Each structure stands twice: as C-alpha cells, then as structure tokens.
Length: 141
Image 1 (cartoon, rainbow, N blue to C red):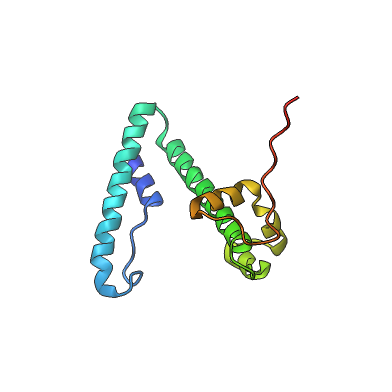
Image 2: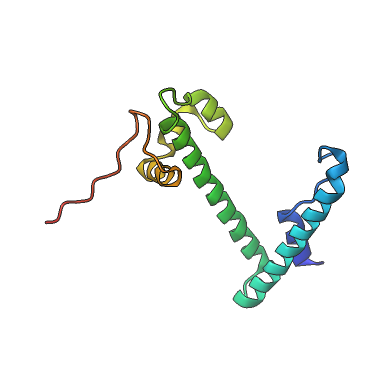
C-alpha cells in the first residue's frame, strides 16, 4: 500500500480518454495532471515529515480548506451578482440554481463583509439600492 500515492490519486484525479476536448490535447492534459499529482504527493510527504501528522488527516484538512475557499468565492460571486451588477441585478432563481442553493438562501449567503471584499477587489461601490451598508464602528464610551 502506497498511502501518499493513494491520497494523491484521490485528491488529484487524472483525465480519462474522452474527458478532454479536443482529443488531441489529452496527452498534454494527462501529463499536467500527473505532474500535479506528483507535486501534491511530494508536498504531502513533506508535510507529514514536518508536522509528524497522519497524511489522511492532512489531506482531509487540505480538502476542507479548499471547500471553505470555494464557499467564500461563491459568497463573493453572489454579492457581485446581486449588489454590483448595475440597475438589473441577477435574479435569485438563476443564482440559486448555479450555486446549488435555494433562492431564500441567496439572500442570507453573503453580508456586509463579502460586499466590502468585492468592492475592494473590483475598486467600486455597490450599484444596488439593496446593498447593506458596512456596520458602523462602535462609538467610544
């Protein structure tokens, strides 16, 4: 059993024939995926040695961090679609379908922090009248 190799194969799948279009790019895509898998295995082994921790737990932590980053990105994209898209923000229904959420979930998926992050990243303020203003700092007592 090659624990590190198994974990790398799970975390970094390689494309199968027919997965890549156009088909003539398959060898290049396969080589890139195999290199990414080898790089992940090398990094995982180094983490195991440095942290003296179980590689399965490290891989799970890596996957959780990726999920949290994806969730954060979804919240930022929802804030952009609803608050920064001019006079006609995206409707809840298509955003909900694309995000795998319910329309009511879209309303509460992001808040002032996500709106401010998007504003900072794109360099402009929200277009929407619905935009929730950032919380005011507490007054000194």
